[in-house]
Image (cartoon, rainbow, N blue to C red; front, side):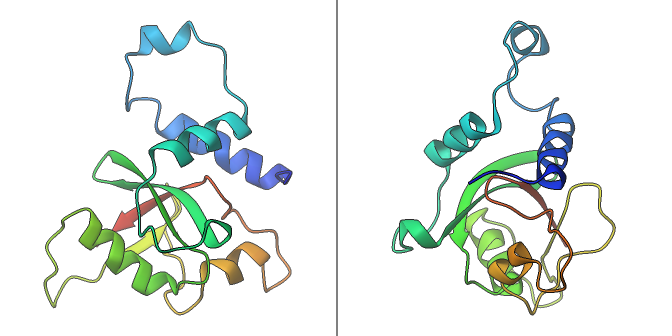
Length: 142
């Protein structure tokens, strides 16, 4: 599955945003840049989630909460609002009635629509190319 130019740019911006996370900068600078397929493979190897989701229905994401990125997989047919609540529960965050967790693109101001599924956003139901794809980074906000 080839990535569109917008998706490759979003992946590159996610890489740039997460440069400070993980290995030391000196170690990372000596390595050549990995291809998007290799990065997706690494994400899939480390991702956690509900194992009852069929492999074909999994959407692999890197979810960031307060500067810490966690690789997860979700059902591509899940409603985004419910998925955000499940992610908060999986990350062991406080589930208080006044706290509503939402997902958004890193650096984006608007959260993803809570009433749509990931599959609808990936398909770009409004005709525009989506920046949401398998292996992308999202930020969990409250």
